[in-house]
Length: 128
Image (cartoon, rainbow, N blue to C red; front, side, top):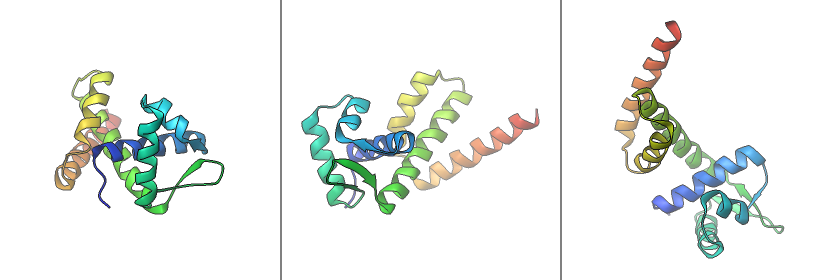
């Protein structure tokens, strides 16, 4: 199952909340994203069917290994792109919003180049 941008956004949000709080429920995801309960319920169902997450009997969401690996990749893209844009002088709010859109469409090849350039930039900053 291929995730669309909205599914990727839900998965990344679940990952961020899961890393921060350990235990999360659908209501936490909805509050974090500002989405309605029906929208979140549908997305949770799709992510479960795609084996990205599981939900226990008490309603707690857990990342599957597949889901965690994919979400880590998304989160890395988001973080690197945000930091790169900020290093270029973009304010944090705009950089975060733009990175959120970019992370879903950038190719692996282009992201690898951006990431390598950003890591070199970081090393140069540390030396100074």
